[in-house]
Length: 316
Image 1 (tube, helix red, strand yellow):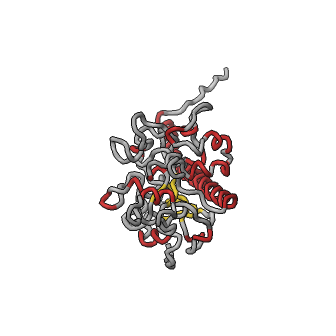
Image 2: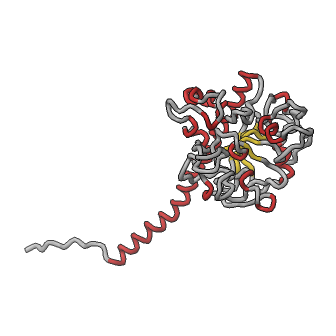
Image 3: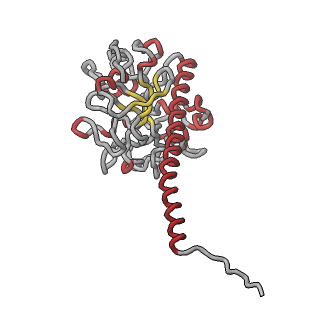
């Protein structure tokens, strides 16, 4: 009589070997998957910057000038003005350019809280995309959509002005009136400028870059009681670090997402930085996007931040 052989199962040792092999494979594959994910996120970020650069170009083609950093007195920023050139015409129409930021109509929903996907880098680990505190309004805080990008205001934070002129308003608006020179703010989105004013060359001048914002300050504006977060609404021009930043001496690129670099460690809310490994991306005035290493010399950074310094930029 023929006996039926019993099917043999895994022994404990064999099972442990299989588990070990699977663990090794996961350990080998996981970094590769993470690298692919980060490469995709960085590519998306690059495309976001490219879109904003082209939007500024189209704005200048339409009006003959770059969008100002903000509309004086109304305080709506360049980010609002380029919306029609980023396939956001409907959102743009919800803003009233004659009304102050804090008095925008909300009949069809609040446009200030509307998030634009291209204003966010997927590498930033955001838990919120709407500012939760720290605008410059009085009384109740006015929520507004944040962004992971800011324009460049040049290599300095303040500019001198003749007696009786408020340099802060002129700096933000790029206002050439009241004796303020249009060349005082040496950034690119500061007022009535166009390509003719970029004497250093469009390929040598920053336009917009990734802003430095530690994760603990996501959604917190500069004027927050808990600290200077620098992550208020991109649409709100009432606080400078919401929409523009500085690059140069005392304003280096952040070395890491948690960096507090700057003059005595106090300017981290006004510098550029990113959540990419070892690079910070900028779109230049020719709409090209380039990645810079955080360790770039601040003197070189200052030359890239200025549109008319007349200096030769060293290799970087």
